[in-house]
Amino acid sequence: MAEGTGKKASDLFVECLEEEGCEYIFGVPGEENLDLLDSLSRSDRIKLILTRHEQGAGFMAATYGRHTGKTGVCIATLGPGATNFVTAAAYATLGGMPILMITGQKPIKKSKQGRFQILDVVSMMQPITKFTHQMASSDNIPSRIREAYRLAEEEKPGATHIELPEDIADEHTDSRPLKRSLVRRPNADAKSVRQAVQALEAAKSPVLVIGAGANRTMTSRMLLQFIEKTGIPFLTTQLGKGVIDERHPRFLGCAALSAGDFVHRAIEASDCIVNLGHDVIEKPPFFMKNEGGPTVIHVSTKTAEVDPVYFPHIEVIGDIANAVWQMKEDIVPSGSWTFDHMLAFRKAEVAHTDKLAGDARFPIFPPHLVQQVRATMPDDGIICLDNGVYKIWFARGYTACRPNTVLLDNALATMGAGLPSAMMSAMLYPDRKVMAICGDGGFMMNSQEMETAVRLGLNLTVLILNDSAYGMIRWKQANMGFKDFGLTYNNPDFVKYAESYGASGHRVQSAAHLVELLAHCRDTPGVHLIDCPVDYSENDQILNKDIKELSKAL
Image (cartoon, rainbow, N blue to C red; front, side, top):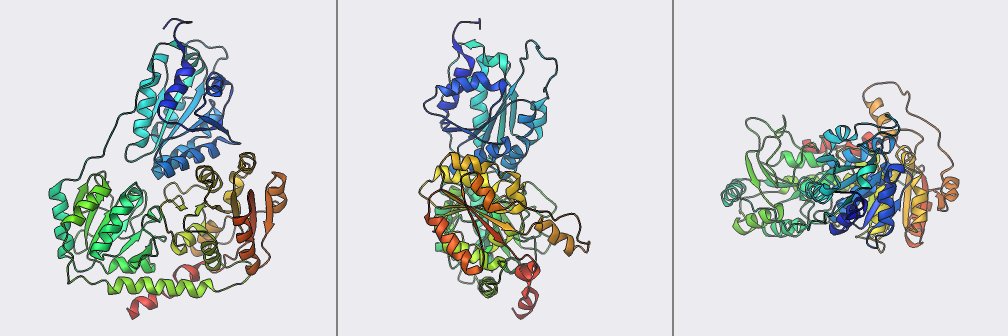
């Protein structure tokens, strides 16, 4: 297209994003994004959210994708800006969250600065995205943006990337945005549904395992109807928490540990396991055997990725919500089913946890902390967990009442995502209570986003579990027989640190004080930080004491 005719390419790029329904762009622009930034300044439909680090922007975009199912968009410059997106790209791709990352680049048709800051960003992004592309012609912007969105949102959702060089952004073109297509996921084959139902009807003690892929619109409703009709108990993986209200009498727990927990004993009592939305990114909470094990039914939008410990016998492939509905319509509940052993293990886990949660020592005992956070948060409140041993405590002991109210990362399991995830949740749902729960190590990896949270006028609480160490690795170091080495550090005064950003800082002085602070921060507008000393010394007791004895008794 000849220079000076048609529309400026950067304007077209923004129009294409608007056509896709983009609401926010998160990021840290640079010199190579200035054309796009100028075009964005004239958009009345897209809001730029300036962050203090590209990683935080990527985490916010990914959380937007998780909550809405729509693609979150983030922007960075070339070189170091683009490399700072790498962790967020992997976080979104492994975790199944749709995002589009836009990075700048030097002019590709002529060079003004040699190789200054230039990396092959497209090749770098290739292994960790579903789609990556360098724009070499402004005429192709509409089709490439449409393709990036399509692939980001298609099962399994994930990260996509477009590099927009300076000279391409400055071109002119007569191209126009493309409309989104209307797509519905195909229904499962009736014969596979019949096979699955026959296996369930023939089983003695079937069980449902709800995984990451089941966290989709309508699936919760269909699953609840299926459970109500059949009475079959269910458990979740960490990424499946909240798909069904965990106060349900048939809930068996969350498979937060790799093995050996109460919930694993419940699974061992089953002879037919229905795995709904399983993704091998999460370790299956059971280990299959070539012979003699339970029948495993895989219900998902895609065929099972075969793994040494996961090779299902029956596969029901299609829209999960519709597949569950088909199974519900076909199945005749069996009078010979028995679930007593499974439910007994759940009852025992609740009793075990309740006993520990009553311990009001200081520094705060983890089960007590989880209990008090749950008591503070309303049913629709959202907790956003960073990565550390506390993720296991909350996955296992925090009752999720609704979908996407417990945001955690059991895929990449990166540190630093808790605060940006909470910020995005507070932006999307200003009338709901939001809490970031971070270790001191994870918080400090993106703590500068406190300024962004204050600048945006968000209402949220940041609960820092303070042990002045990388506590989870230190715990594993001890369990593996290594000496205590290399995992402790000093922290800033977190109260003063919060106040320096214009947030409110608080420090827990006792278990009773924790309860007061949680309620105060929940009910007081603004950004709050709570520095909470925690006692990590008895993780083994918290997580698995008495399980072996209980197994023998049952």
